[in-house]
Image (cartoon, rainbow, N blue to C red):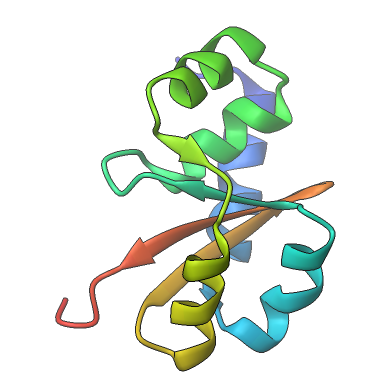
Amino acid sequence: MLPEHYRKLRNKFEDEIGPADWKSLRAHFVRDAIIIVDASLDLIEVGIEAADNKTDRIEAWINGGMLTKPSPEDARVWEKGEIELLSIIVAPFVLVQHQSLTE
């Protein structure tokens, strides 16, 4: 059985997850607050782990290249609208995940 706080966070992030566009992300990019979550990970699960300060797991994902900071090239692609993004906010960060436009 899942702990109550885990279920509450999951419900919160399920309610809040949604598409993000460059206009809404630009300010977060400038303040270096965006983290790209690899498509192989569950975006909500990463959000829960981040909110719970599970540093060992977060560091493992970072070291494995599964959590990265966006590059200027990422920003250019996002600005052109060539990639669909899902996002959740885990203050002070915005977690984003690329979605295929063909899905």
